[in-house]
Image (cartoon, rainbow, N blue to C red; front, side, top):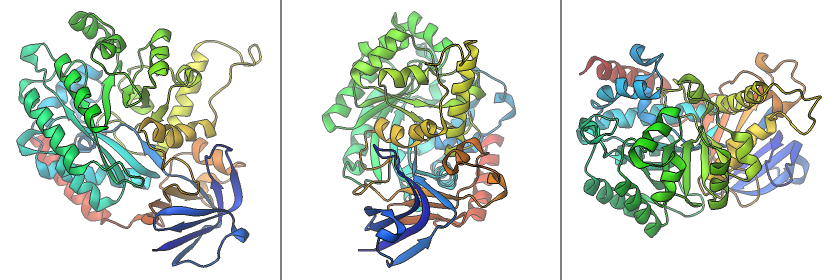
Length: 460
């Protein structure tokens, strides 16, 4: 059983007491935290010892919504200045050319980017499978990088000919979707503590699947005890679509198809009212807040403060790399804090006039990216640095130009411009060491990925 000792670091535990240990240490055995405390109180020997003097150590970030394949279609000129529906219509025909190799290489790229930003667990939503592509391609690629993966078996069954948004060329039959979903659960899903692979059932959105598929997916997921995920209430366009197509607003539609419960989380959930927030709270639904993507597509600002006040679990997601153009989860922490403050400012209030209204703090934003994300995914083994939990964390050396003059080591990594982390550790395994990936050759990965991206856009 391998042991790892982290010492002389500034530890941010994110435990229930919100402990921060200025001269902190972690003793890790076989991938789990065995001891935590001051450096002087822990053993001084282990199979591997990292002296992280000058580093701040935080729990690994948890990404609750992504589309890995979109790393291949970043900043496509025709989609740069479009809203969601037009952005999708521009990119669907390009995505229809994806191959299994494209899924593999884009997964490696996205997970590598995430690791370099401090992410240790990621949920991905793959919802189209052209040219023989399978979710297996993503799962196989994830093993080569080493992050924990919640792989969502997405789907689209409502093509343009049936009143949906996607072209018929990228939709599948509902029978084949459900059959493959069951296969994937049986083959890959692992619910044990420390799991590296879990399957999620994730029909894409109200405007790309039928109500029958939503109901049958929920039934299948609950039969096997796996989670459910979909896009919801991302834009005002979707609200109008749902009213016209289903006679419900998006949240009401989810209720009508049995999609509320502690096993459900929604991406975005921007356009909701107070009553719908209470529905989420009552049924313990989670939300993946994607601030950068929402800004990029001009979708709006999610009511995160109201969600948290109501007791709704909220995590962070970078969303697709074609609506974010990056996979930097620490940047998402920063943007979540900043856009929350923008939303507060739009009310025209004055803090001095209303002392009960407060701005989101850096530590609250970190909570969204760690414990919030873990709660959204239904995991109790990650999200904080505590005895018995997975040894998942990242570190940043504060002795660098970007952090000069910063007077709070924790807030520094949020208020400061996002940087490449120094170490990312998953289950005691170093995925990033001294700012470099250990599980893949970054230069070769960039070369392969750019070659695939150029071929895809050229129509090859």
